[in-house]
Length: 147
Image (cartoon, rainbow, N blue to C red; front, side, top):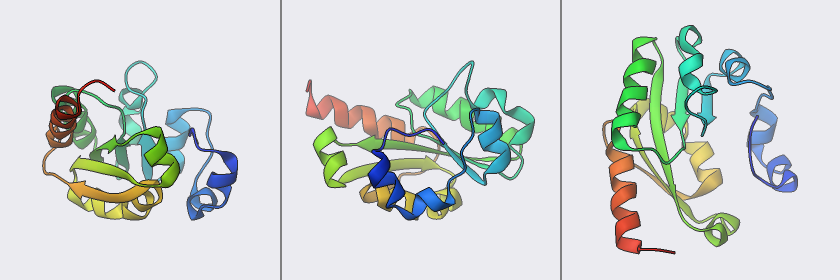
């Protein structure tokens, strides 16, 4: 389990009891039905290949829409489900539990992840096919301007 949550917060959450702990993404993929990740590339999901059958993968990295679509295609070709989840908000909003999660990809996986998204923030939205959440996130960043 990889996270940046305070241990007290994590342990008080129902998610902690359900999470599996693994030192590798491959191990997490083998042991879990759904993997939340923000690691792509040489150490990421692209290495899990044959272990994706029947698994759900939620990409929480801010990536460009084309990369999201490519990852989605690769995961689907291996029998897995893909959802991009772009988290909107500041550290203060994270501390207050008021983040917003924009998602796109597999709608059934979006529904399966509702309890996790509710633990992260106040609301989540499903925006359509893979790449849509990345596009919406880029637009919001342009509107917000530099922090």
